[in-house]
Image 1 (spheres, rainbow, N blue to C red):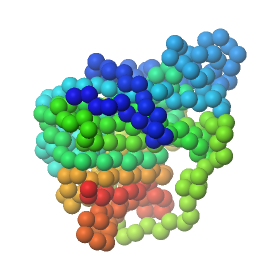
Image 2: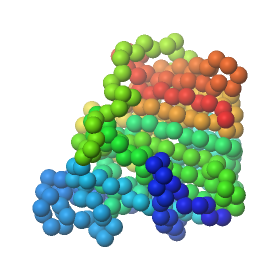
Image 3: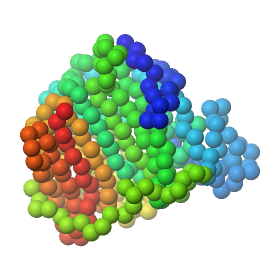
Image 4: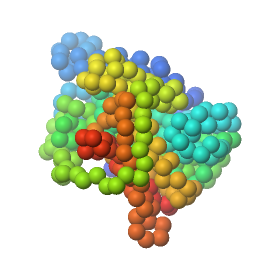
Length: 336
């Protein structure tokens, strides 16, 4: 099965590049670190050949302010077998407190697709640095159960570069289809991850939209649960997800990026909240999360899961630091 070429949010049709397999994150982070250094050097020293000029044959933008262009390509990997993922899936489920079984929760499919979206971010023509990007939000739709043994097609691309009050934000989109499915059907899973690149600005950008501006005072609800997260939480999620970003691994490596201690992965927190929602979400659901203050490890996080009014209205959730009254994340889970 080969689905039609994807289109971005503004209607652009993307060129599809088929990759032989899902890449490994270790090599991608090494490439991302090198590319991030070149982007930073290119902005500081724009006239130096090989640094301020194009970084490779794919490059169309020099990553200077006002000249940010996303690659017009989507990566595709077909024939992704899952029959050998049972143990890995169970490790993930235990870590985020999901029931152990052979049906993949939406957060696990994010883990499965994350290397391909990272591959987009380390391309020579991706104008923003992988290291230092801030994870702002996720929007996910799971349209039916995906189980161990399914053969999948995965796609990923970048779109919707737009202003933020502190720089620019970009959406990384991933889709999962059953490899022998109907190409006219929507993907069984679709995830949109929004990231912020601080200090990069669009030439015609006029600053943040109202939705991006700081929010007013927030009053925590009554908690329905409490998580006690040890200092090893980031390393444990990294071992399962492959996301070994230094900000999650130790206090020492996190300090290099401006954090006093290691921070929990945003998708770990979101996945635990999704698990806390429980079976009321059903087999098909929409799941959103917005991230606020990072969870510095070790940490105690109060969580509230609140059913919305009306049949099938779903749930809202929020996690916060009760001692400081700081919100860490919030979102919704709505049955489809």
